[in-house]
Image (cartoon, rainbow, N blue to C red; front, side, top):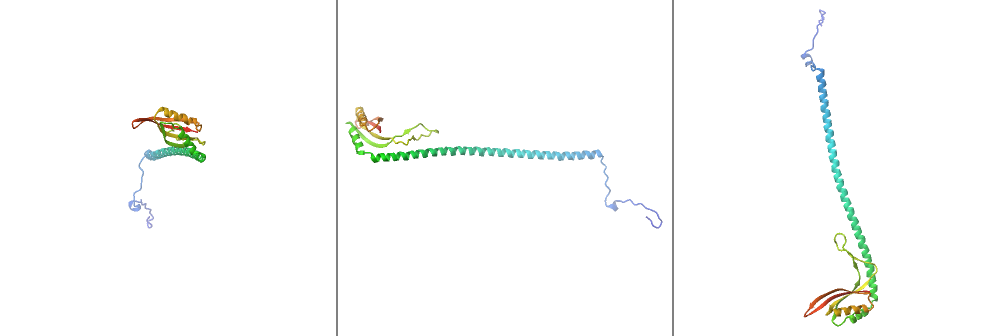
Length: 218
């Protein structure tokens, strides 16, 4: 404005006044909306991909944890079975040990009252001519059952009641001498059963003898 003359002068701000040109949006409104829609689609697509990746990772992790859990459960079940089997074997061994202690006590009591001089005298009187004894063993009768599971041999079946027995081994020059020995042992009245468990022909020099084994149970 010129104060002296009283006139007004309009000044348009230019580049020098504001330092930059004014911004003018020359894109149509429809194009701007399409760009906005495309940006939204890209954002939503990225979110969908991210969610899918998270879901896949979660599924893989759960599957891995599931397989690990199954393996641990199987190992624990197998270990429990082994522990139960070991406990059963330990209980069976404890029972057999107790029976053996009772049997040993019974045998000790029997041996304390046994007249060995009388038993030996009976055996000496029972041996006929043409036979000889090579072994006399005092023990206790046991009963062996079939093989146990797993192919291992079963332990003898034991009972708390002791059954004394006398095992006799020797040589006989004839079947008649061996039969006479068996008959005389039965006639002593000391044993309830007299059983021949072995009779094998064995050459002794120029002779052939019968290697025999006899079990006498009282």
